Length: 137
Image (tube, rainbow, N blue to C red):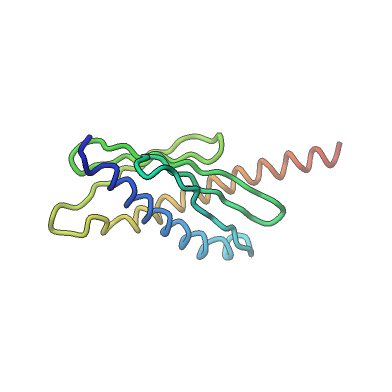
């Protein structure tokens, strides 16, 4: 792993966090008629992992874990997991010296956000069904 990786992890996590927030702000009111807030749970500066918490109405709360690994050169794997759901891997390739080091990260953030919203929706559905079963019992 190169010396620049921890710094790159932090940059990718920063852009991903902003992209997720923007995507959630745009999509949630359209999909659900309400806002789901997403906030970053800070990890140590040199960490290749970051977590986010999704909070909605009715004390709904889910955790999203993101792990980044440097594959080699300018390539990174970004692995996401919502609660105990399945992991999903996305691959990010930093542009060469000709472009901004994070020029496509917002696109990647939107792609990851769409996937995470689908996962959050499934997890919330499961949680609501579990709660409904308890209330019916």
